[in-house]
Every structure is written in C-alpha cells, then in structure tokens.
Length: 177
Image (cartoon, rainbow, N blue to C red):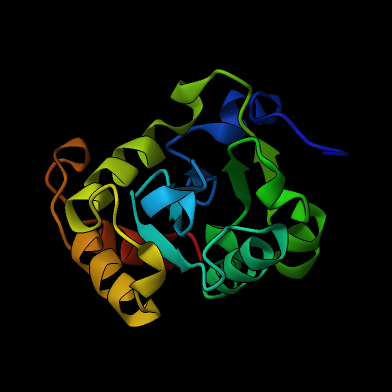
C-alpha cells in the first residue's frame, strides 16, 4: 500500500491514550461465518467510545470501508477525529481519500504489534458476546449495530474508573471543543 504511515511514527505525545481524538486504533473488523461477512469497528482510545460500521457487501472492500469510515468519522466533531490507526490490510487502500474527506490522518499498526491496537482487540472480544463466531454478520442491520454500540458505550468500564464511554465522549467533546 503506497504512502502508509506507521502508527509508531506519531510519537508518544501525538499517540498518547490521554490525548482525545488520537483514536480510533483499530483491528478493522470482526469477521462472520466463513469470512463472508464483517462489521467494521472503531474505538476512541481515551474514552473507549465504540463506533460500529455496517459492511453491506459482506466483505470489507476498500470502497466500503472508505465510505463507512468517512460517514462514521464525519459524525464526530473534528477534534475527536484527528487520527485513525488501522491494522495492515488492503481494505484501507483508499486511506488518502478518508483523510481528504474527513481531515483525519491515517496511520497503520506495525506488523506483528498487537499492543498497538489493544483497546480495539478488547472491544472486538466484547462484540463476540453479541455476535458469536460463526454468525452471518450480513444479516445484522445498521440499526442493530447502533443498538449494540449504544449498549457498549453505556457500559461502565473498570479501566475508566467505572465511567461510561458515552458520558466521557460527551465530556471530551465539550471540554476540548
């Protein structure tokens, strides 16, 4: 993939978890039955706020992911979508278009570096409570995905001192606007 920027290149000050909007570090999706369906996942690193991306084509193609990510990030205030760190893969081949459409700089996790996407790996595990392995994810509607995201965002998290991501994202949006 041409012109990819390593997630390690952002520097500790730019990539720190305490810096709102440096988010979503993402293992791009969870896969469904037979790897024929998917749900895209984004997790804001400071608040753990979850955004789920409907993949209507079943497979997360570059065009589908560009459109889904652009729509998802476009719904956030600009200061909450400064960067996106994504797993390596051809589904983000159109990352320059995401940056052009949203102003969000896109970085890529280094190969064999799962610690660069720990928040998202944890969230993807939580999603398996709702969508067990083997589920045909193509049958899940955007409304159902939003319901699940809302439930996860309203769930107190130990790592957040038992705060809820939905409350924290609201606080960060107001405080950093």
